[in-house]
Amino acid sequence: MDDIRIYIKYYKNYTFFEEPFNEVDNIILSVLSYINFDGIVPTNGKGSIRLSDASKLFWSKYTNKDVNLNIMLLREAPYILKKIEDSKRYKDIILYNYIYKVNNESQFGALCCKLNDGSIYVSYEGTDSNIIGWEEDFKLAYQFPTLAQKEAIDYLNEVVKFNDKNIIVGGHSKGGNLAIVASMYCKPRIRKKIKNIYNNDGPGLRKTEFESKNYKEIYPKLKTFIPEHSLVGLLLRHSDNYTVVASNTRGIMQHDVTSWCCYGGHLTKGKLSKASKRYENAILNWLDRYDDEKREKFTKALFDIFRKAEIVDFKEFKVSKLKNIIKILGYTKEIDSENKNMIAEFIKAIISEM
Image (cartoon, rainbow, N blue to C red; front, side, top):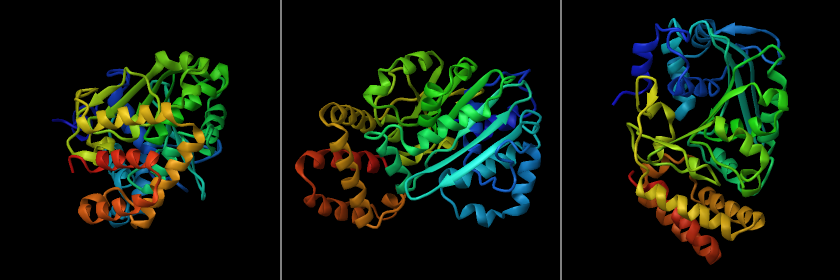
């Protein structure tokens, strides 16, 4: 099946006037916020740069070896950028307001992309296979707003100007959640300008926010995509009209949107795996049974296990799966029974189909 690289090959010479922005373009622009544009794309309203120029500067600053030291989208995104740098469709996209912040509590990144049809795609950076990023995803279950969510709301309020129209907000993983929350709680005049919101395998919302007036207002604009084997995208409460997308890889690595399949400008529909269905049901039962305090306790217990097992990246389950599982199961003896079942279900979902 085709993926976004094939899409780029066949659609790179069509402008957005000739072939309007579509869900595959959304995937491509959502991964650009993963790229380290520090010193390349201006921030704080201090100018802008064409995508083709930004790509050339990036690749003059970094080598393939530098890029390959990264993981998942941190590694793949620069190669996607290189593929589109001289394309008629993407080369003249204007990049601006790049931001990246990280501390002990949170990580936040975002980027604005102005298309040649005048539309603006606000891209929020998400998480990859790193355990720290996933722990931040789980914090969404018991904390609102998180520091990153506050940053996302402020960012959208600041970057959308009076004359801007046709705003598209999107992101991958945690970035998808940030796209939803920022659209829900930005200034009303900005919310009216938002045309579409793309959540690409990102967590949902707590019940309070999910049932709020703000969510109902943005719901008709929301498009949610998850792969056949999804974990992050099934966290918390989400609309039931999500689209399951086929992938050319297996298991947890389907979280990487560059593995998603497409036909033309449409993502190829797939079927949610049995493991993900079990995980989805377990998550909903967990949310119904436990309050924020117990969810926080579970999250700390789960990621404590990973730290003790010296797992810093989910890809390590593939490398020495049995050894790590034995370690983890051993540590669960220290966890109370009400959290133990949920932890076991999560671990099963991770290793299934690997």
